[in-house]
Length: 248
Image 1 (cartoon, rainbow, N blue to C red):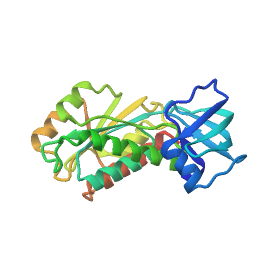
Image 2: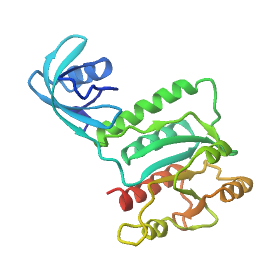
Image 3: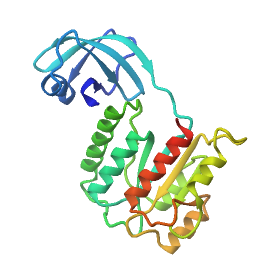
């Protein structure tokens, strides 16, 4: 639950006292109604978590004494989700669940059949997406807040990304994702990759040209089964499987 976990962008690991301000102070004092001498958890963008005791709850800030520090454990496999732009509500849902499932980077991709186009409001959207991811991390207990990239084109994504394993969901071909995951499973000779990028298409699917370009540039096509899933269902299903097999 979020009621006992609060975010500060950066905490000096040598500090004895810190202050909680802004929205997080409001949440602590007015929503959770936490009082002096109660203990809470703090986390920052470095992956560290801190057990802290509330010393003073003032009008504009809360003063806290650091009691304990924990470093977040890195995942066995870093998961990068490259999600084609979809309608706003669905995109926010995917970002929320991605953060809960341990994605370390979220890359919005501009595909030919993306219904949503990048506009002048993108900075506002990026800020909202970051808040959604942060709240999801608070709820889940995941210590790592995913970095959300500005939207990029498919060719730029493929050119710049250096993940060890690169997969894309295809409606037409490919091995089942579970075969990839068990092939590289902990009980097998080959270890899971250090990083994986999973590429998810838009509501209208990939064009033939996009599929060919993706396959020609080091991606392996994978399937989630015979049913055609909505893009948000496909994204969450893929992440849940990867997290279960490789990062538990």
